[in-house]
Length: 173
Image (cartoon, rainbow, N blue to C red; front, side, top):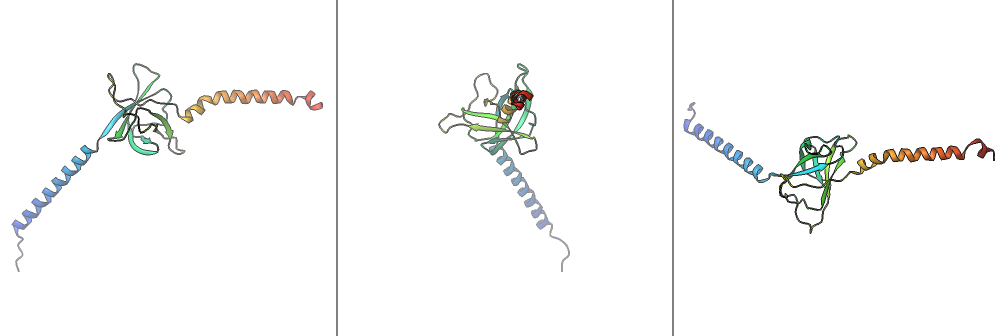
């Protein structure tokens, strides 16, 4: 029996393994280039507490991307500029709006895109804009929190009226 390895066979095996690895890397790189992302801008006017870079972006509940940047607009401190990286080919229409949504009870926020009709044109970048801009709207949670002081004021009025109604004179009558 021969104990020496065939150097030609070992060399051919190593070269085949290197070629297969190279082909696999090229395949992965090409797949990533073809499945790129589109960037969209949303200007929020309220608080974006709970939203962070990497938070999910959902279109009618379906995850389609993530938040890539959160900054205060240097020209208008009342606006928060949020950049979204959305999967290439996702149909973002002109009549869609973005709002904040909570992910369960954890307090982590995500961006929810809703609305839109099939006949509406795709959202495109306007002249002077770096990215196409999705209009924002207040979330239902934000609306409730904005109305909370009014609700407390009404509850106080009701309590005052009940106190007047149940005073000693009315109770004696």
